[in-house]
Image (cartoon, rainbow, N blue to C red; front, side, top):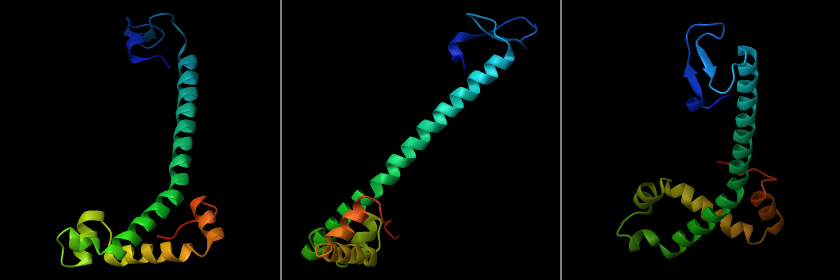
Length: 128
Protein backbone atom coordinates (compact mmCIF):
# COMPACT_ATOMS: atom_id res chain seq x y z
CA UNK A 1 0.00 0.00 0.00
CA UNK A 2 1.30 3.45 -0.81
CA UNK A 3 2.44 5.60 2.09
CA UNK A 4 0.19 8.52 2.98
CA UNK A 5 2.70 10.99 1.55
CA UNK A 6 2.48 9.28 -1.85
CA UNK A 7 -1.32 9.54 -2.11
CA UNK A 8 -3.01 12.61 -3.44
CA UNK A 9 -6.59 13.64 -3.97
CA UNK A 10 -7.46 13.81 -7.65
CA UNK A 11 -10.54 14.96 -9.42
CA UNK A 12 -13.40 12.52 -9.39
CA UNK A 13 -12.61 9.76 -11.78
CA UNK A 14 -12.70 6.01 -12.18
CA UNK A 15 -10.32 5.48 -9.21
CA UNK A 16 -12.68 7.02 -6.66
CA UNK A 17 -10.68 10.19 -6.03
CA UNK A 18 -7.48 8.66 -4.54
CA UNK A 19 -4.52 7.68 -6.66
CA UNK A 20 -0.81 7.24 -6.02
CA UNK A 21 1.11 10.16 -7.50
CA UNK A 22 3.53 7.91 -9.41
CA UNK A 23 0.90 5.77 -11.15
CA UNK A 24 -2.82 5.30 -11.40
CA UNK A 25 -3.18 1.65 -10.39
CA UNK A 26 -6.66 0.15 -10.30
CA UNK A 27 -8.30 -0.39 -6.88
CA UNK A 28 -7.79 -4.16 -7.18
CA UNK A 29 -4.02 -3.64 -7.13
CA UNK A 30 -4.32 -1.37 -4.10
CA UNK A 31 -6.37 -4.00 -2.28
CA UNK A 32 -3.80 -6.67 -3.12
CA UNK A 33 -0.95 -4.47 -1.84
CA UNK A 34 -2.89 -3.69 1.34
CA UNK A 35 -3.56 -7.39 1.95
CA UNK A 36 0.13 -8.22 1.45
CA UNK A 37 1.12 -5.48 3.89
CA UNK A 38 -1.37 -6.74 6.49
CA UNK A 39 -0.10 -10.29 6.08
CA UNK A 40 3.50 -9.12 6.49
CA UNK A 41 2.71 -7.04 9.59
CA UNK A 42 0.72 -9.95 11.02
CA UNK A 43 3.70 -12.24 10.57
CA UNK A 44 5.93 -9.70 12.35
CA UNK A 45 3.44 -9.43 15.21
CA UNK A 46 3.32 -13.21 15.52
CA UNK A 47 7.13 -13.38 15.65
CA UNK A 48 7.23 -10.72 18.36
CA UNK A 49 4.57 -12.55 20.37
CA UNK A 50 6.57 -15.78 20.13
CA UNK A 51 9.71 -13.97 21.31
CA UNK A 52 7.88 -12.50 24.30
CA UNK A 53 6.36 -15.86 25.19
CA UNK A 54 9.80 -17.46 25.03
CA UNK A 55 11.12 -14.88 27.49
CA UNK A 56 8.70 -15.99 30.23
CA UNK A 57 10.75 -18.98 31.42
CA UNK A 58 14.08 -17.21 31.89
CA UNK A 59 12.45 -14.12 33.39
CA UNK A 60 10.39 -16.15 35.86
CA UNK A 61 13.54 -18.00 36.92
CA UNK A 62 15.33 -14.71 37.60
CA UNK A 63 12.30 -13.46 39.52
CA UNK A 64 12.41 -16.61 41.66
CA UNK A 65 16.09 -16.02 42.46
CA UNK A 66 15.40 -12.39 43.42
CA UNK A 67 12.46 -13.46 45.59
CA UNK A 68 14.64 -16.00 47.39
CA UNK A 69 17.23 -13.34 48.16
CA UNK A 70 14.51 -10.90 49.24
CA UNK A 71 13.04 -13.45 51.67
CA UNK A 72 16.42 -14.65 53.00
CA UNK A 73 17.65 -11.12 53.76
CA UNK A 74 14.28 -9.82 54.98
CA UNK A 75 14.70 -6.96 52.52
CA UNK A 76 11.35 -5.45 53.50
CA UNK A 77 12.86 -4.40 56.84
CA UNK A 78 15.77 -2.65 55.13
CA UNK A 79 13.25 -0.77 53.01
CA UNK A 80 11.46 0.47 56.13
CA UNK A 81 8.44 -1.86 56.10
CA UNK A 82 7.18 -3.68 59.16
CA UNK A 83 5.54 -6.45 57.13
CA UNK A 84 6.65 -8.34 54.04
CA UNK A 85 3.12 -8.21 52.64
CA UNK A 86 3.05 -4.40 52.53
CA UNK A 87 6.44 -4.15 50.87
CA UNK A 88 5.87 -6.89 48.32
CA UNK A 89 2.53 -5.45 47.25
CA UNK A 90 3.78 -1.84 47.01
CA UNK A 91 7.23 -2.47 45.56
CA UNK A 92 6.79 -5.58 43.41
CA UNK A 93 3.04 -5.70 42.82
CA UNK A 94 2.99 -9.27 44.14
CA UNK A 95 1.52 -10.74 47.28
CA UNK A 96 3.88 -11.87 50.04
CA UNK A 97 2.60 -15.41 49.47
CA UNK A 98 3.65 -15.21 45.79
CA UNK A 99 7.12 -13.95 46.76
CA UNK A 100 7.48 -16.80 49.28
CA UNK A 101 6.32 -19.33 46.69
CA UNK A 102 8.83 -18.05 44.12
CA UNK A 103 11.57 -18.29 46.77
CA UNK A 104 10.54 -21.89 47.54
CA UNK A 105 10.66 -22.76 43.82
CA UNK A 106 14.14 -21.23 43.58
CA UNK A 107 15.40 -23.38 46.47
CA UNK A 108 13.77 -26.53 45.06
CA UNK A 109 15.18 -26.03 41.57
CA UNK A 110 18.71 -26.13 42.97
CA UNK A 111 18.31 -29.91 43.33
CA UNK A 112 16.27 -30.39 40.14
CA UNK A 113 18.48 -29.25 37.23
CA UNK A 114 16.51 -31.06 34.52
CA UNK A 115 13.27 -29.43 35.67
CA UNK A 116 14.99 -26.05 35.81
CA UNK A 117 16.22 -26.43 32.21
CA UNK A 118 12.73 -27.40 31.06
CA UNK A 119 11.14 -24.38 32.77
CA UNK A 120 13.75 -21.90 31.55
CA UNK A 121 13.53 -23.17 27.97
CA UNK A 122 9.71 -23.17 28.10
CA UNK A 123 9.49 -26.90 27.44
CA UNK A 124 7.31 -26.92 30.57
CA UNK A 125 5.19 -23.85 31.31
CA UNK A 126 5.35 -22.00 34.60
CA UNK A 127 2.08 -21.91 36.52
CA UNK A 128 0.66 -18.57 37.56
